[in-house]
Image 1 (tube, helix red, strand yellow):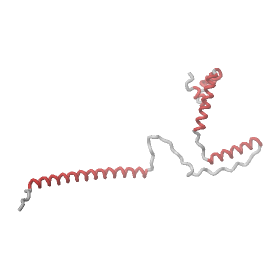
Image 2 (cartoon, helix red, strand yellow; image 1 turned 90 degrees about the horizontal axis):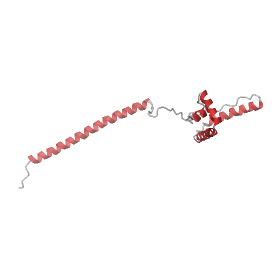
Image 3 (spheres, one colour; image 1 turned 30 degrees about the vertical axis):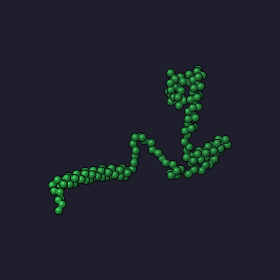
Image 4 (tube, helix red, strand yellow; image 1 turned 60 degrees about the vertical axis):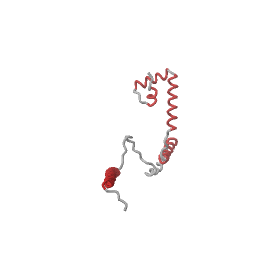
Length: 159
């Protein structure tokens, strides 16, 4: 009955009827409420352990916004907008495009170079095989000629 219900409730992806049912079950069943709490703690620990730190410019921008908001909230007066931090330099972080892991995208010039190398390798392979078989047949021809020469030429006689 509660298979995946707690996870869905915690993530907020339940319909209104299912959410009401989950809230009712949580108020009536203390073990279920304890499971939800353990699930929340486990998920929080997972996210904290696998967190990726943001670029430093994001942190300073958020600090400026928070400081400005805190001052406006507590002092009830407007404050000039805090100085905006410099945008992150393009060479500090690399934009990564996630796509289908079974395909690799390369620049169109690399594709042409790869095709040229592939075609040339096939040409050189065919040429190498041709030379190998040609030299092999020439060696066999030489051996055959040597054999016929020995059979046809008489042995030299001593004087």
